[in-house]
Image 1: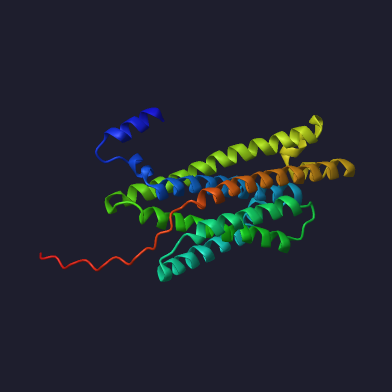
Image 2: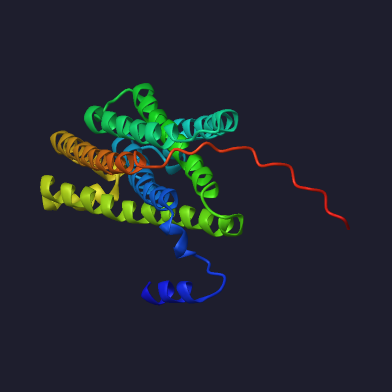
Length: 257
């Protein structure tokens, strides 16, 4: 990482133009992207695990149950783009998106149970998707409108990289939280069954099954409460973003060939 930073400062056309981070909106957008990636991949990654361990769903079915999140992302990614195009203002989207991610993650963290109604849980997942849709595309617009045209590609890639990096860190951190919670609440002799999954858990005595399922749900709740904290940091970082109206660029002058 140190060598990479040194090289990026020295080359004429850096892949990751660090000087762009001297621009307020670029730096804040990068930090928000990291936090949103952290919250998104870190929490959404563990919902399929919940469906597989608690309800015995296949990986395909558990993935399909995340469609409400994808729907929310698509709707607000398109919707925010339309609003920004018509009004020229983007400030409201990273702020409101971070709030929606906080709300959705908090609802799952507070209300998730072993037998929660799938419609209710889908609504919570949809709220998270709406929040992500507000933020992800808007950050790209903010970055692109804040740097010179020559740096636009580099700055956009850097923002996407920070979001992906946040996701990688989030999966690792939330995975550690989940595992530590399971280790502290489930007796060691039953942990192999927990890691083996639903088909092994249901072969255990009923009272042991109940204990495992309840403690597993508790661990997932802790993960989502942690996601609320990360989304709250994203909200705090969104508030200082400079409000700038994006104007339509003038038509390019004809060029003689």
